[in-house]
Every structure is written in structure tokens, then in C-alpha cells.
Image: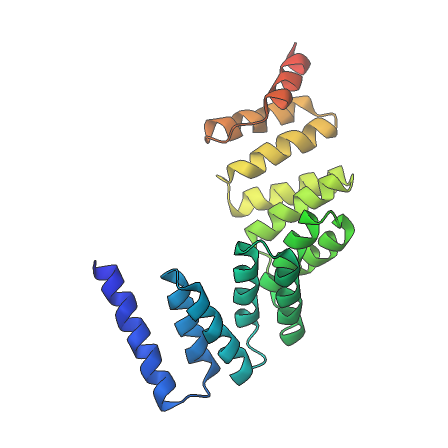
Amino acid sequence: MEKAENVDAYIAMQKQAIASNPDCGNSHYNLGVALLGQGKTEEAEKCFMTAIECSPGLAEAYVQMGGICLKRGDMDGCLDWNQRSVKAKPGFSEGWGNIGFVMLQRGEVEEAIKALEKATMFNFRFVQAFSTLANAYLMNGQVKESIETNLKVLKLAPDFAVTHNNLAIAYLEDGQPEKALEHAEKANAMGYEVAPEIMAELGACKK
């Protein structure tokens, strides 16, 4: 109950800030984030649009709009808003990460790689972007790069089970079944179910 009261108090504070300074993009943005957290998507959307009108360089607001599109299943809208975010702020890693994610979903692997490489260059601790980049490399037949990138993820997040699963697949592709098995077992131990066909292939290699 206390958390809900805190959010309501925060919303009231942002509304007060807007009343005293209607052209402050940050206040509209902050209000939008709080409303989004309450599941009030349409109200939040209006706040983000106003934030952009007041502060066209507020890249975070474009990304939030992209996230709303993604929830609605509008991949083109998501891509468009994230592209606008990196136009507003060229070094905005979150925007590049989202562009890479959408490109990968659309099967545009090389374009995804370009975007994700930018995301990880601008933020070398961006675990999700590194993980998606590793997948993109694997899909593009760049197995060594995939392994190297997955290992970077594990340095940042050793318990990221998905990465252990991805390493199992990459090492198997690279002809290193012992390492593949090691990571498959780690993924399983962390509660991530490695595909039965991968485990069967590793079992055959073990024999």
C-alpha cells in the first residue's frame, strides 16, 4: 500500500511541477513513466508526446514511445521511435539496442549487428544488448564472435542462464562439445531448460 501511496505522491509532485512550468519536458516525461508503471498507457503516451514537443532532444521519451508500440505488437512503430531516439542523441545505447532487437526479429541480421555493436560500444555494461548481439552473430555464422560476446556477458552477469544456453549452442557449432556440455549443464542448473535436441546431441558427443 505504501508503494502505491509513494507513486501517487510522486505523480502529484510531477503535476505540480508541470503546473508551475508547463514547458518542462522532463516533468512530462517523469509523469509519463509513473503513469506507465500504473498501467495507464494512453495517459502516459500523451505525457511522452508532450515531453517530446517541449524537449525534442529527450531521447528517453522516444524510447518509451517505442516500448508502448512494442507492447501493442507494432514493430514498425517501435523501430521508428527508436530511430528517432538515436537521431536526437546519437550515442544513446538503449535506442541502438532496441533497433538491433527489432531488426533481429525481422530477420535483418546484418543491420541488427550494426545497431547492437553501436549499443555495446556506447555502453560496455549493456548486458541485454551484448546477449542479443551474441545471438545475431550466431545467426550470421560468426561463431567465434558469438562465443567471445557471450563470454563478455558472463563477465558482467555470471548467473545469466540464457547466456550459458547460448554458449552451449555456439560451442557445439564450433566443435567444442566438452565446453558446450559444461555450459548446458550450468544453464539447466540455473533453471533454464536447454532444448532436448541440444542435450541429446551433447549426450551423443559424450559417448
